[in-house]
Each structure stands twice: as C-alpha cells, then as structure tokens.
Length: 185
Image 1 (cartoon, rainbow, N blue to C red):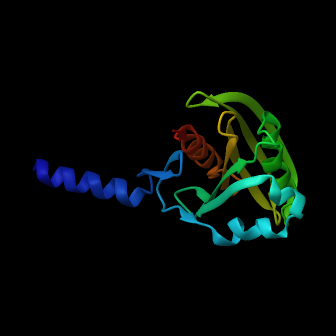
Image 2: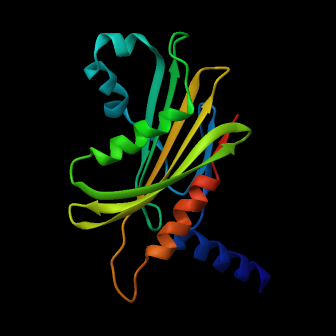
Image 3: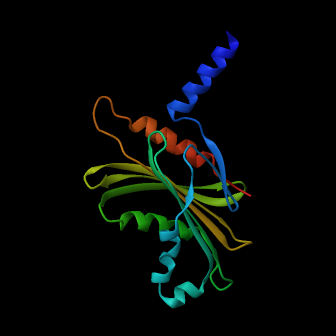
C-alpha cells in the first residue's frame, strides 16, 4: 500500500504544476517548474543600442521560460558592466520602464521595497496593470553586486480572470514563491 501511495503522491505533484525545479543560470539560482532557456533574440537586442552604451556592457545574457501553473512567462537577464559604469540601486527602474513601454501594457501601477538576495542589495517590485485589455500582474527582482559590477533582473508575469472564481491570489502567491526562490552565488 505505501508503494502505491508514493506513486500517487508523486503523480499528483507532477501533474498539479507545483513541482519546482532548481535551475542555475550563471551565478543566479531559481526554482521554476518549466525549463528556462537562453533567449538569443533578447540577448542579441544589444546590437540595437547606441555604440557608446554597448561599450559600457561587458556581458549580457537573457533567459526565458513559459507557463508554469498560474505563471504566464518568466524572464531573466544578467548584465555585467565595465569599470566606468557602476551598477546601482537605480537599475531596477530599467525593468519597470521596460514593462511600462512594452506594447499592449497600460495602467501599470507598481510598488517597490529594498531588500537583499543572498546578502546582495536588491529591489523587489510588485505590479498590476492591463495587457491588451486583460489583467496583468507580477513581480520583479533586481539584485546587484557592486564588487563584480553585475546585476540580475527576474520578471514574473501572470494574468487572471476577474470574478468570483478569480485565480489572482494563486498567481500572486506563485509569483512570490518564484521570487523568494532566487539566490545569487
């Protein structure tokens, strides 16, 4: 009977979408149930920046993952700047402005708090708005390491239907769980 119970329990976890896999992307660790892949298109977007901006960037990588439970999309970026451009707390506004200026996004409201991630200074942002008329919400974590002049941005997107059976609370809790899982080594 216990063998059957273990198999059934494992199957329930697998098919419920709540199994989180720990994944490492350079120095960033994160638990997310879907595979996270290198995003060549986003990583290559640097070529569209002015040359004086590109000169200040030593390394940049972007990653993306699809749906996991109530999470629609996960996007992760890591950047290392050259010696002339130190990373700072203000870098979190890059991610916020990215959302505000994203096509289809409107009425974006956000709130942020200073925190730390694995001992590194961080800013955590919660946001809500509309995307092409649908409800949009999520969290952003911006963490930075002054000693290596590196920064990481983790963006979690979710949507929900309004009404009595709204999945907003589940989506918000899952986004919070993903952001809480982030570590920097």
